Image 1 (cartoon, rainbow over the protein chains, first blue to last red):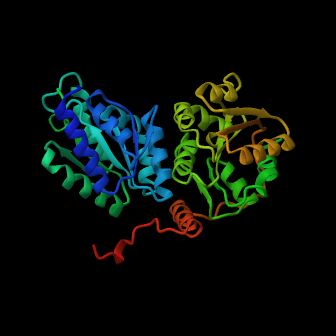
Image 2 (cartoon, chains in turn orange, blue):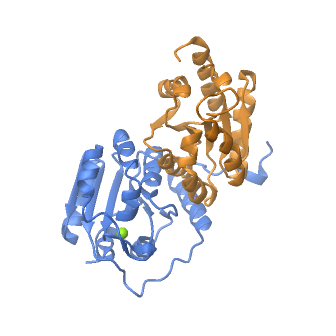
Image 3 (tube, rainbow over the protein chains, first blue to last red):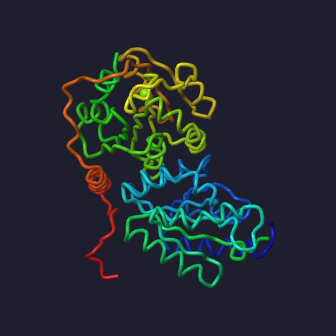
Length: 170
Length: 199
Ligand SMILES: [Mg+2]
């Protein structure tokens, strides 16, 4: 996964997050997002909180939001499923905007996680969380900035699904 | 002794600290320390994580997590996450009554799972059991003054005083009151301008 494409994509994604105003990021790794997480970790303008399980990240981001931080949670879709109760009874119930950057495992062309890929968007939809699939580098700024505006304005989480092609990984 | 007696023992020492509660403890905490800096959470387990998020975002401000054994055991994964950041301003209180009190009184596993060992094993720089209100208060003051992430745990009897007033607070109202209180005391804007915005 250590290739130039992945590094450049990661830089563009993190730059997009910062343009969106994000300054606080909690993460749980997926192999496909290693470069993104490394870039978050290196960026002195972002407070990075590595997680042990995604659900606690929902709580950490909620607390940070209440205190004025603009938060994003970087996770895989499996981890998103782990966190559905927290998203429902904390983020949605207390109207907390959190940008969810979700690696879309099991998307078209991805082997091994088709079950996960199949349920991801229906679960987001059932929770009333608007979601956007981000496939192209040139759309990064527009979608990340727009998603954060939407999250703040609706006071709800908004999900951006990141694909393999976007991340520049195999 | 019940949790209420311990909460009462430290209420006057908590200044403008933010306090995050869960379950039945909220009604007790509001009774002993009424403040716009109190927040009641909803998701079982997340009280410590929400308190940690506040502590990370406001490193100069004391934050108190008022946890219970059921919530604590549900969010064990959250302990190493907190320990990794070592927020010196977070004081983690655990009231262990060995039951899921707010869910009807079924036993938790806390009579065999030692919370202090769990916290220390997860990397908390300080965690201890206390057994009297005096010890509890002394440990609390020590945690406050030493600026060291601490878990203070105490075994309590289930139950609470019968005459406590119910929380006359909607949970969204609680959120907004809490955020406005932070805006006032931190002297900064937090909520976006909303419908008066020109953007
Ligand atoms: Mg209990």
